[in-house]
Amino acid sequence: MKLGVNVDHVATLRQARLINEPDPVTAALIAEQAGADSIIMHLREDRRHIQDRDLELAKQLIKTKLNLEMAATQEMVRIALDVRPDTATLVPERREELTTEGGLDVVSQVDHLRKAVKLLQDAGIRVSLFIDPDPDQIKAAHRLGADAVEIHTGRYAEARDEAERLKRLDEIVEAAKFASRLKFFVAAGHGLNYVNVSDVARIQEIEELNIGHSIIGRAVFVGIERAVREMKQIIITSRYVASL
Ligand code: PXP
Image (tube, rainbow, N blue to C red):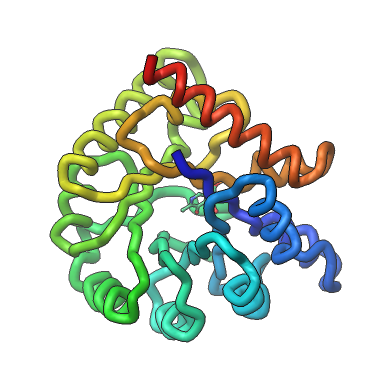
């Protein structure tokens, strides 16, 4: 199972002072050395954390894969075609949200998304759609010809009690199985941390976990290298135990 590390919140800290440190690209390089399989950056329309320069530098310097999270807007498609990340993950984006709150509503936007997906794929960029664990969204992603889906684990992460947590986990299991049957590459992410990641890592159909906030938060105390290594170890161990 692969681990994608999202470095947006290193940039959040930098932007708090509008200076040039801490640098998210440096964080990305250390994360790679610690075992990250890909680096994720979300270039938001309001540029609240990652800046265009971060993306360009990351593309030049990272040795693994670059996954650009982006809204399916003309501006972002143009930037993606210019920078050429390995993967473009299309996410919904609202200016007033603190973070990406829900999955992309593919069902109601098939026509709008089709153009963006085609432009990106024609340029050799793999397209992933960040969606809720909902079979209708997966079917719509399939109709669009996306290469991958990333299942939104936010509701699972925010469950208030064990019954709800198990229910949300089950939705993720079913969605992962369905997406895998449709031959999607299946990723998952949002709100995963050192405690709740294990149950998601055990789902065999999920091939990649994309994690940001908890890793960068832990890195404040133990450094990025250790924070990434610890997460990777939990994921590998959970996966191994599930396979026994
Ligand atoms: N995947 C996607 C598509 C996201 O938008 C985010 C948040 O930027 C993440 C994964 C990582 O979420 P978190 O920061 O909660 O780990």
